[in-house]
Length: 379
Ligand SMILES: [Zn+2]
Image 1 (cartoon, protein in one colour):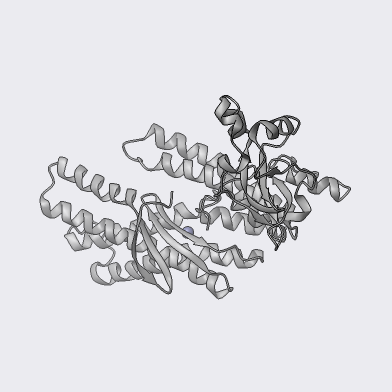
Image 2: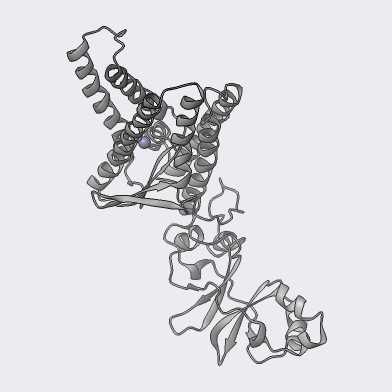
């Protein structure tokens, strides 16, 4: 989702990007204005309005990231999508009241903008809302849009700001994981309602179904991340790895090794040379090679993959599980001398942790928590 974006600049030390799909929105707006018989000046004014609207959203995002910075939390970047801005904070502040402030800081910027516009409008035009000058319309519309941004963002649909407020308040009464679960479920119920509303009123609310899907999906992803984190807190890769596994000697022939591999549940075999890690061999590669006489005579080293992922036995388990690509399910674990000391099986590693600690690690949660690729969307 974060690919194909353009850098707009760096402000307050944080890079600001625009996603390519962002340009669909002004194009759509300009087109609908044009096809409705709008004059070119109207098209330009509408585009100008869209630019100002998104300036308000950008300022909103900087409200979040500057509040986070006050609590010592950095931000990777901000990306503007057609459905709004996404600021990627490095983490969430630990304290619920800090998260509350970070969540509120964004809408607070729009409150400031709306208040300034409101005062300006009243100062120039009084309370006459029917004034029809073009600049007047502009200020009124921008005021209305900021109010809409405040109201919409404060809907308690996690991971939107209102949902984060909900979670931080819930965190004061229960643990972080449970609070996140409650916020996610409430967010999903609201997302389904918003989706239905958008679908039934597509011409007026064309972006609502996308926003609803975004809320549903990203909320779930973020909950998973919190769930994994709560289960593997303070654990290292070595606490969860398989310690008994089979390695493939680099000069062994495929035919010889296939016989051994057939007896193993393993799907990934670390390839070793003089006891040191060199690459991996997948079960499918062996099966493919065994189909031909030529393939059977090849050596392990000839068909092994050299570019695969490995992890350090001392690496924090949470970092590994969250940052892992989807297709990596068994990963060689190495020590500092490049010796293979284990195999991390991402499907079952949390259950292994529970077995070793002699108690069910987190009885409230299903043990089959799988890895996921980082959505990169959460703030
Ligand atoms: Zn926000």
